[in-house]
Length: 148
Image 1: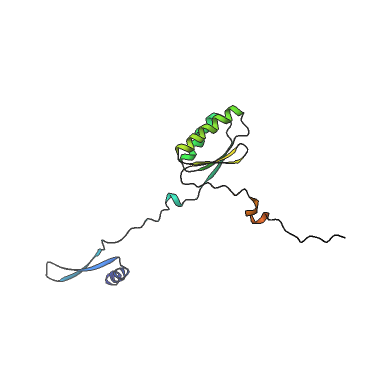
Image 2: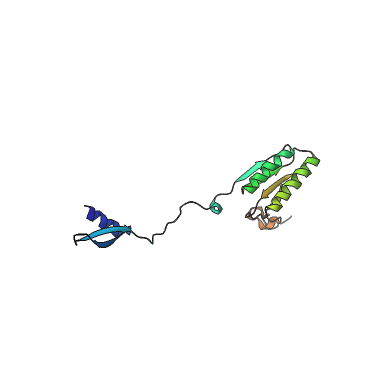
């Protein structure tokens, strides 16, 4: 029974057959594990994970540390600065812009007082402002009507 199991394992490549001599002089088949097996990790790499986007509406300057921590953790952040006064808005934006710069990231303005912040490894591209390149915004051209 064990001989049949050893043969099956040998055919699958898990074991190799070696012959050894016993003290009595008889040949004994022993099995050992192959040393050239490759071990492949099935864990996903960090760059293959799906990106995460978080929307934050800061109310005080203390919220910028949370934004910076998320950027360091490779999270894409959108911020809405509409609900803070002008002086605090400028302070918050200056701080997060410096954080993004330190992380080799980018900033994109989405709307008035709404910004997208991304760290290193994220490419930010703006949609073309020319509406003729967007296929669903093409105007239909009808032939001119005959006037009477």
